[in-house]
Image 1: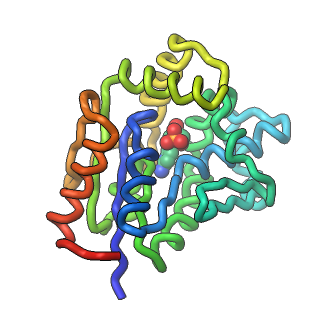
Image 2 (image 1 turned 180 degrees about the horizontal axis):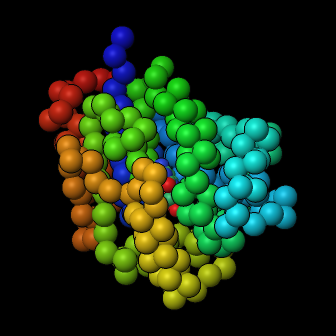
Length: 224
Ligand code: DC
């Protein structure tokens, strides 16, 4: 049986995970947050007291890292729940380095492809439509202005009690945009066959409805 896969790519804090989670819930699909996997890897490097900017040292840890995403959207690193830890500022500041290393990407992409093989999925990330699932049934490229994204991430952090300033968040978003889109291997870019959704002036409900409409146009009306 052919499974349906919906790829949602775009820059940091464009609201991909909120939308992807809601779309997956509505369609009864499995949500896969690939960014969480790069984040969990980063936590492992930091836990070991090593420098995530050091590619060789970071890649040497690949065999030691076991990452699991659960159906209730929890993230486990070697059996430990790191769901909250992966959103902390030191992880934000370092994850783009880890995500730029080819060997780490190859290891995590292999796992991501396996997850999409046996299930209908909504997968979000940076390279899903271009590299991880080039034959995805639907490809969305979700964007918003840097300012909008920084405010959204700031408000999210405040709600979760994660201390930060708007200025730091904006700098972090700009820095990650740059690193994610300038790396050599599978950089952030829109797949030629993706549909662009600019969410700068849209509510979450509007974006979710727009994505559901795109899915309906591509895949027809179906009940999962
Ligand atoms: O979506 P996010 O902010 O949780 O992603 C964390 C980092 O991981 C981000 O800097 C880009 C990187 N990433 C990636 O390179 N490829 C993916 N498929 C997902 C995330």
